[in-house]
Amino acid sequence: MKISNFSLNELLWQFSQDYQREYLDRFQHLPITEKIADWPSPCEQGIHQEKFSLWQAIKVDESLSFDNVEQALEMKLHDDIKAYFTAIYCDSLDASCAEGDLSLLFAWNEKDFARLQENIIGHILMKTKLKQKLTVFFAITDDDDHIISLDNETGSVWVEKVGCEPHKKLADSLAEFILQL
Image 1 (cartoon, rainbow, N blue to C red):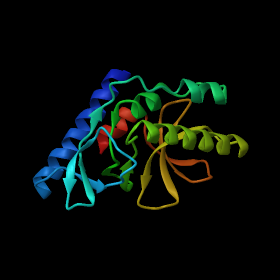
Image 2: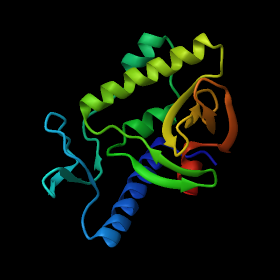
Image 3: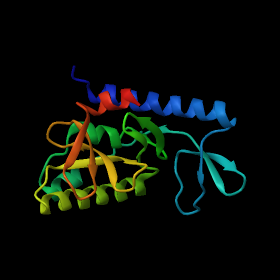
Image 4: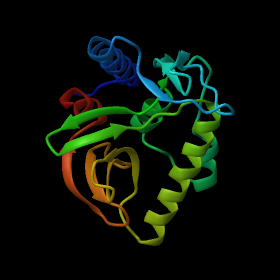
């Protein structure tokens, strides 16, 4: 079954809302992250214990785009990875899958989105230099050497050791992977 970008966006939104609800049930307040004065986010909803920001995921209402990345690399990024990173502003969301614990990465604000784009460019340039299959990371694992990435050609989701070829397929699509979390 092919899942549209709209469906992936809605799936990510629902996952973020479920995460927030479970956090609220457990701690009786919104999720927290360290407050950084010069790194504001539309996600911030107040202060917790003076040094933390309370936050919640926010749907991206401006048009974030990977056009600049695609032009710089002279290639197209898979539609699913573009939809994933332009769906919501959010701190990372902790989750688990059959492989173990992981953190889904998102942009915290517009500046963070630009930094994310730079990191994706660096990752793709490294993969090109190593003559490896092109992937784009979207999650980190509890093992610092491993990331969860999307195969840019097929859209399938893989575990890969940083600097190495993907070695274990986790799902045929990003949406299928999110549903497994």
